[in-house]
Amino acid sequence: MTEAGLIAALALLAGGLALDATAAFQLMLSQPIVSGTLAGLVTGDLGTGLAIGATLQLVWLGVLPVGAAPFPDTAVATVVGVGVARTLTAAGSGAGWAIGIAVVVSLLTGAVGQWLIARVRRLNMRLADMAIARAERGDSRGIGLAVALALGARFAAGAALAAVVLVVTSVVAGHAAPVGGPAHYPALVWAAPLGAAWMAARARGREVWAFLGLGVAGGIALTSL
Amino acid sequence: MDSFEARGERRGRRLTVAGRLAVFARSFLLQSVWNPRGMQNVGFCFAILPVAPGADDPRGRTAFLERHLRFFNTNPALASYVLGATAAAELAGRGATEPEELKRALAGPLGMAGDGLLWGSLRPLAALAGVVGALAFPLYAAAAMLAIYNVPHVAIRWRGVARGADLGGAAAREVIGPGLRASVRLLRGAATVLVGLTLGWAIAGAEGGAGWRSVVAGVYLVLGLAAARLGIPPTVIGLAGAVGGLVLMATGVAGG
Image (cartoon, rainbow over all chains, first blue to last red; front, top):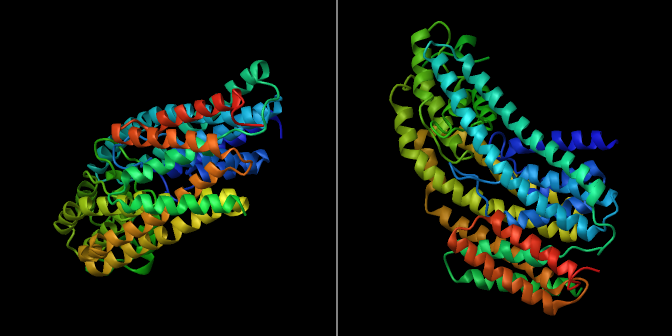
């Protein structure tokens, strides 16, 4: 696949997965571990997809897209991250730099996506007003139209954000990608504690620390197998 | 497409299996036009549009649209109980009063129950199963997460429509009753063990170097707890972690 074709495929994937967060289905396809896997399959590097997906999943474990609370665009951010890692690797970066920089770009993309989601939801208000105005005349077709346009806007916002970040990264990486470097980026060592902190902060009883301790002991034992 | 009545359904009838399937399928778009003013209002009306009065009752149809385009917001999965009960009430000819009372009484409790059970407990458990799966069984990690979350999620959506249609608002008691607290506790306990497993794996490290890993993990655990208490967004504290990882790598503490 050409560079442009790959960027287009990733942008379409990002737009589609972005719908899942709240607008449609809520099947958790927009969660980083799933989005990362799918993006990894598109780029042909499942390992990088899982590494970026698992890292972002732990960071955003506490993101709850409920009510009017703002939330980062996790699906678009993850797909972008996997695409950025692939671009950097193709430009000669070692896996350490490629994944580390990709995670930073992902988090920043998630924040921009959060701003875009708020804009789309403002647009939805106008679509809702249109549906209500038509309904007052007994016309229900405005409801289906509002649903279709709102889904289209959400898809387009996600796909456009992904395309812009991937194109910019592709141009910049051609001039400034770090060449070589370490083969491993230390992601779990900071992301796992952030995930654990969220679970502990939300728990009411003290037994959370016992569960956490049990898990830590199990994890240490597993690495020695 | 919009009206069962137009295809022969009449007021005073029960919600058929085809009607339940239509409401169930449309419930997945409940939040499609989520907006700060009416929130799920358009999505709610869209979901129960199949039971709207037909073209032969224009006044009834306009009144139906007007009452179901009003403000509504709750957990999207558990909204199925309100959707099923509302669709049944509309078909039974009790649409003028009952749905409004149902929405007012159930939106809050269902929102709290669903956000606690599905968003706050089942979702992190499934996500962490995916993360642990990524460490151990890469090919199946995403599939495991999707299955753990969606088997109960989709079942609850269908059950909500079906039980709501049969029993009305009373059906929702099964998900906002005392059994919920025990389920939340169990799911969160399991999720905490899984996140601990990931943390233990990170500290021990397959390539060794447990000393510096323990120190870094401890620092980020404290930072994460402080961020949660101070309300600092996860993206911000995540950026601190990601940049910290780059520094560890660039200085040669980690990597290789």
